[in-house]
Length: 262
Image (cartoon, rainbow, N blue to C red):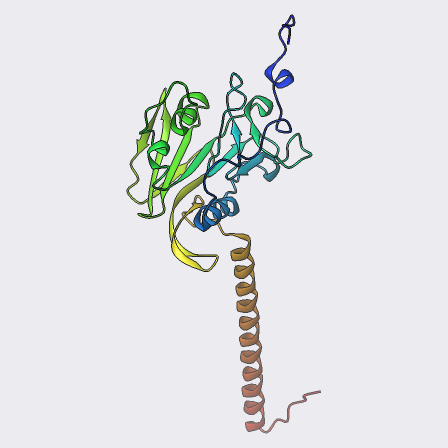
C-alpha cells in the first residue's frame, strides 16, 4: 500500500472487527463454569450512575486488539469495561471483537480471574520473549494504560486491585476486600452469597451506600417482597379498622343505642 499525503489514519487503513478473527481454534481450553458465571455477575451489577447504559460497553472473553503496528495481536480479558463508547459497534451492530484503532477508546478497567495456568502472566511474573507478543500485564499497563486492573483468585477468594500510578501499576491495600472507584461512583468487592444457586464468594459491584448492586432477578424479587409486604400491611390495617368498628358498635349497644349499619 502506498503512502498518502497526508497519511491516512489507522482507522481508515487497518482491519476492522469484521476483518479480524474473533476466535482462535488453536487456543487450548474453554472457559469453565466459574469463568462463565463470574463475568455475568459483573455485567449484571455494573451500573455506573454517571453513565447512561448506551455509553457503556462490557465484555468477557472477547478478543481485544490493541496494537496497530501488529494488528493480529490480541488479548482476551476475562472481563473488561469501556466508558464513553456505544454499546453497539458504530451504534448498530453487536461486536465480534474490540479493536482499539477503530474504537478510539481504551478499556477503563480489566478483571482477570486467576487460574494456575494463567496466574504468572496475569500478575506480570513472566519474562517476555521478544519474538512473541507481550503478556497481559504489559499490554494493560504499558500499551493500553488501563487505569484499573483487578485480579480475583477463585480458589483463595482473594481480590487484588492495581491502579495505574504514573508509568506502572501500584497495588492498593484492601483491608475489607473492597475498593471504591470515584470515576465510576461504584465499588468492587468480594461478596459471599448465592448466585445462580451457587453459594460461594463472588466479585461484584456495590454502590455509594455500601450496598451490593442488585441483579435484575434480585430487583424483581425485592419488588415482589415489597408488594407482598404492602399487601400484608394493608390487610392488617383493614383488620384493625374492622375490629375498631366492632368495638364502637359494642360500646353503642351498651349505651342502648342501636347503630345504623346501612
